Image (cartoon, rainbow, N blue to C red; front, side, top):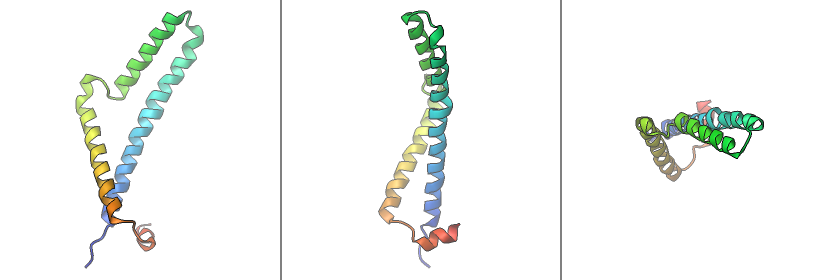
Length: 108
């Protein structure tokens, strides 16, 4: 019986899905949302110092919500491990080639 690549491709798809969720969370739920709040408050800021202070608050909120502060070292290490494993799997699977169309049909 031959070796099936389908479980590996399924794992790859699941990892890419997880990475997409992380990317979506960081970009849309954190950075974009905080940026919109900051931009909306610009008209009420009386001077450059107020703009700078508000921007620092924006940066602090983004850093905290994206696990970039020292207190989130365990979370950051877990995300780093997931991304490292996903990259290794990608390299290994690219060396194996693509699945034939029949395999995709069978998986659907």
